[in-house]
Structure formats: C-alpha cells, structure tokens
Image (cartoon, rainbow, N blue to C red; front, side, top):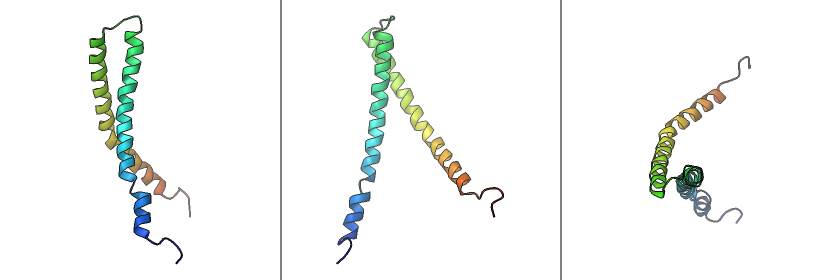
Amino acid sequence: MRGVPDMQAAFAGVFGQGPWTIVGSVVAFLVGQLVDGFIVLHIAFVLGPQQWPIPLFLAVGTVNYACRTATAFALIPLLYLGCRLIRACLARPAVGAA
C-alpha cells in the first residue's frame, strides 16, 4: 500500500501540536514582558543614579507589567481588524485589471 497507512494519525501528528504552540507562545510573551520590564527598570533606576530602593522597584515593575500586559491584550482585536482589512484589500481586483 502506498501513502500513509493511518491518515488520521498523520494529520494529528502534524496539526495536533497547534494549540500547544499557541499556549507556549502566549506564555513566552507574558514571561518576556515580565523579564524585559524588570531588567530595564533595574538597570535604569536601581543601578542608575536614582538608586531606587527594592520595594519601589518591585512596585513600579509590577504596575508596569500589568499595564503592558493589559495593553497587549486590549490591542488584540485591533490586530485582527487590521488583518481582516489587509485581506479584504488583497482580495480586491487591481484597478484597471481585466
């Protein structure tokens, strides 16, 4: 027999990983936001000339992380709208096309 003996298993093997990839990407994004924000604040305001105390650094870093994460999630609908508009523009025939 030629081809794949179990097409369903092959399909699941190739495409079944999708949801896990999405979850991994979201978690990596959130962790990246956390690490990035705290590193920048620590270098700029704890090690820098202002010499923030650690409790202030942690408080500002936490609020910064919450605001950045909330903004990122709030922008998701706009990203989908932008994708929809781009697809609509690409689907239209070019002006003057026969």
